[in-house]
Image 1 (cartoon, chains in turn orange, yellow):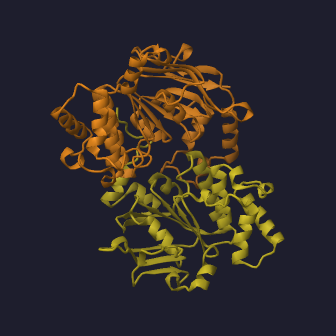
Image 2 (spheres, rainbow over the protein chains, first blue to last red):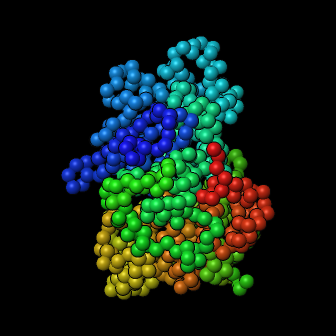
Image 3 (cartoon, rainbow over the protein chains, first blue to last red):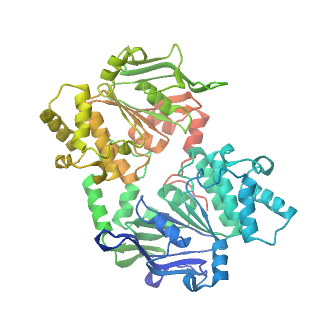
Length: 308
Length: 267
């Protein structure tokens, strides 16, 4: 973050979105999917971007992936604007920032084996690995994501479960030796009992390989579980951000409070009148939170909130 | 417990295959009391949706309900109904809300017409009466009645889901089967809808069979819960018991799969 919003981090960020906006369409029907978004990803740290569908969180991920060109603002890679980079630097960026998609069924080619899926990024991004070393590296990658290479490598995607496929996707991302992993709802299409395993694996990779992790999710409870830092998005804006524990335990923005009040919690019964989430209040909060949140306030060290 | 409204007894359903059959539901029995919210929790493939479909007799081949299975609604076996009885039974006795129910509205018909179709099919009713009933039902789910002339695309996903629920309630069914009714929605919208259903069941007295994989949500909403694994009902009890004193290893494992807002963290 820039200016008064800068979190107290001493490390140099790998990737920074600096006041990035993205507008789709034009005229009165234009959608401002991202509005002056700023955040940084650091080695060995996870940032969770949390929001409901349509809040702009996937737009942020796509801008970080260079799938979308920002309408305004800059994308910085190790402090240098990416749009000013030459072809070699862009190739380096493509290698360095890898993505894990939401749908483990659609993101693998049904006509190719798992080994093939892992061979491609090795050929493309790590030409130094040749011959028999390729097969060895494929095995090592599969072992890293806790799959048995002898069983899994010759298989086709349809022979694997959703959780196994998502592990293959993680292995494929790791094959490029990335510095940043962008994971867009990586577990929302998985069965509940395998979700945690995939999150644990992502976290472990982050720690062991010192990766920066951008974790996009609608589930604030898993955000707390995985990420050191959190940014809460609504209507294209980051309304509150900072240390995950501080934001969740001491929310300052009305939208964050609304979101937290609605998270499923077995300790609160719907019949409890104190736990009632009023629709009128929810509508009002949404209406107010959609307005430009221009001012930034520091709630406490490493915890910031925006207001209209 | 009072006499159950719904009583599922020894329900066994196979999906018939060319070489072998797959047992999707294996000897499942449970009761739902009038006005009660009963939850069925489990992961994909555990058979919970197959049960939901069987209750409305919406299952199709290759699904086959085995002999000695019974689904009793007020003592009457749903599995014995003929086509005419079945038409009377659906919507009037048991209504169903599907996971992507908001996409089940016909995009080229006004909301009013979609209410009329359901009301007209199951009841002798005039246009004017249907319109009054539509207004009443929309008000119940916090949607302004003057929007009944609008088309589905003019509503948000949460509003469309509420409209489907309103259509389900229009014929005063005694049981509503909800199969993952809010999984496609945001948590705040999910909460608003389920809270409203909870209020309505207190007011109107219908029972709910609520199916989801989200145990936390289930405990908030349900009176009693059954846990399914591989077609079997492995545990059932009050919501409080399932939450505080789960017996079965799988129930404990499911609970451990949900990071809580106040629980442990990885880092």
